Image (cartoon, rainbow, N blue to C red; front, side, top):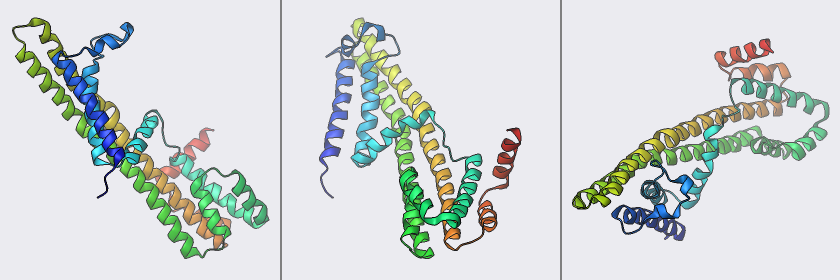
Length: 276
């Protein structure tokens, strides 16, 4: 195995945060002096935050490569978003592929130029690049399935990172609780130092449990869910491209692709279209 300077630096910085939290709990420093007065309230506790989230990130840097950890952190933006690849959009994708077949039959060169210049979906661009270079159907299927598997594996990996965070956060919350209890018991004769110990002890558990159940577990499940829907969509598009390459009629393409769409999805799309 090769030594990773990125892993070492990430682990060291996060461990330093844990140490700062421990020092604050022990009374050696007071981190609360460095935060604005408007942020000072019983539920904002810098020492507890450093211990819990410093510990979570330190363990992530040990478990996963640096690029995977930062890639997972970039997925926090998905917390308040939803996948576009749902029942209605899957049916729209079927119609999109049928439209491709019609446009290719009408003017193949113009359509391929339009795709090359305007298409933003990287998977669609890949398939048309393969189509345009006259790869065989079996080659397009192999490379398309490889790309689908790669994207799905990346989604599962990101999901696993957040699942690991969800497991680690309550554990480091308990670490904060234990540290707080130790400080409290060591200072029973000095009431001024009992408060910080109790505060860190309780807030550590709060941060650990709350972050695991409000952020990490939902994100893990959402990324996996989105990955499944994206995989399904890309399989349909790949099958459609292969049918286009075989010069199948539009009706045949539509019917074969609709076999990949569940009856519930088809009913949902019909109801939406009727409502409109």
